[in-house]
Image (cartoon, rainbow, N blue to C red):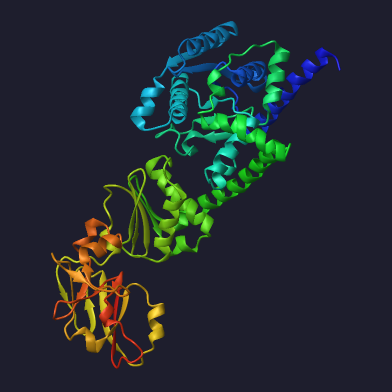
Length: 496
């Protein structure tokens, strides 16, 4: 094959892949001004050139955007000048700005890599807003996809991470990138189906000489170590590793898209309240979801409230699932981004710190409530207490009681029962523990939110012994056994 034929083939390979991506994923709405992020390196130079050639075919205009990170001195200055020169030579509008990424990293507690990425996309979103654009194009390619999958694998990512980068996505769906991304702004990756070797062959065929960023060889950066050390080692075990993992990402992306669509379909059926500071799930309906959708629903709620998931880990989600599964009414977890997860009666709440917790879901007290055998109404009328004697006692009932039902040995419990709120110095001997503990400590350990502790219902007798922290745990000494002669049942339930 002649040199000219090889050059034509190299150009055609990249153009064909970009055309296919544009068609398959609807990357470029006709009439759109596309913001093209250009660093001056091989990938972004290839992207800009191929989009320049295909712009008339796609019916789009281009706007070049370059951010100087303030990190590499004269080299970065030369990169900016190179991009400005290319844009001028090709007659394209261009925006170049500078950001002190080191200062941003220190201010936000980010690594340099994270700060640079955040600064870049914030800049690109601002350029898009000024240009009236809804589309940003960046130059991630197939090798970048493989590196991303490996990076997420090493960090223990789930399906969302192992699917890698998507060819097209709304920035509002990019968890953790921008705190408040503009609605409707799309990020597209036209080169995601092209390999680095194909991009280099394209540039050579077009006679284009890109800038070279020496920081890409710096092995102190995690991604560079993957690129230059880990992947070459793995390719000795499987020479087709890159193609294999690229296909895996494609497969998992389709699977994850199905799960996302399913979540969006069931979201209205499991969500009772969705406000700016809290999302309330129907606990029973949420529990009926498959485990994968329960996890996704919690993460989605966190993202809708905090607009990012940067520090939300697998362990946070699993602890919330465990707490909800045990129906630990009043249980509360603290999540990153100033979020709280609370189990209320029949509800699972994800809320921002400072949100007003909904009292109607719990039998909170405003005054002591003496009980009488039979039925006693709660002061606000929303709950009732049923006190009855069990005619035939079977200890197996203890294993199936819900948190708002108490069985107690009548001969140990006392004769006069009442509900009251906590008092200073209260002590409580929880069932399953060797001895009494401070009630305050017990409530904290059970993750009862502080705002509710002063009104949480405690069942006491005439000796003011705490028999039951309602909905949480009974006292050890009133637990009925097989030899109990008289057993009472106390039921707290919502009024009709």
